[in-house]
Amino acid sequence: MAYGEENVGIGIVTDVFLARSRDEEILKKGQDGGTVTTLLWAAVEERIIDCVVETKMSDDKSPSGFLARNKEELLQCAGNSYEPGATLETLNRIPIDSNEKVAVVGLPCQVTAVRKMRTYPARNRIDMDNVKLVIGLFCGWSLSTGSFHKFLQQNCDLSEVVKFDIPHHPAHTFDVYTASGKKSFELDEIRKFINPACSYCCDMTAQFADISVGSGRTMFRGWNTVIVRTSNGAELMVRAKERGMLETQPIPDESLNHLKEAALNKMKRAIRSITELTGSKGDLGYLKITPDMLDKLRIE
Image 1 (cartoon, one colour):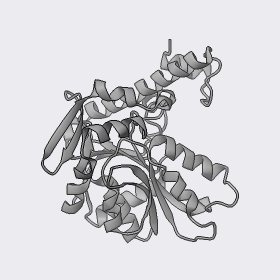
Image 2 (spheres, one colour; image 1 turned 120 degrees about the horizontal axis):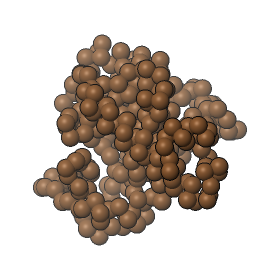
Image 3 (cartoon, helix red, strand yellow; image 1 turned 180 degrees about the vertical axis):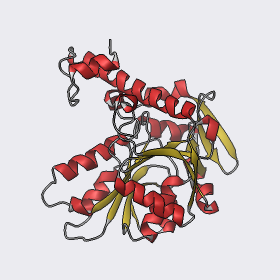
């Protein structure tokens, strides 16, 4: 498939399916199906990359950038924090004379930044030609590292937390897991901590990644939805499957259509927010959308 009107919300698609790791350790540690960690491990094993710019949570569950080089270190980065980490700061700290082949894992906004860095390389920074792989994570919004983290500190013993999760419909909660149980907060209590900038973001599925990965949602708990976008992404998927590291299955039309609808709705909400900010459909800020495209999106 290509980026036609039927894929306007999710971007370029060469293949899309459900996947999960065959590694029990990764499945236990991963957020859903452990696909991201498994793909990165496969990329290291196949010498496609030497290291991965990831996000790692500290003991108090504050996220920050981390450079992982082996399976053990990749496992330390597994799971979602729902707070953005300064991942690209770690990328920028890689020495300019380094020849290491690098992968980057990030949210849609971070993936877009990496692609822009490749198009307009900064002086005295990492050689962007060494970035061989970009894996994007589906994202509806992220939560403030300031106010939300303070909320968590006041309501949880973060040193005991092993996982955060926002289960899909019909659940409406933010769940905090510890070794002894689970504590849930209503999403309405959490939404006030959403980063304001997220309301202007059109990209739910990291459209500029080589491979984008999200949840399998309610119908496929423990699986990931995977969108392969580039030849680099397709090659990695082939190698991971040949090694027996991943299992896959087709994604039902119902699930794919729901993903497209959700991504398109995020785009529409963002365009409305930008229009409210600028006061005109003729000024959409950082977006380069033609009037014809706006008409096709039926933005009122």
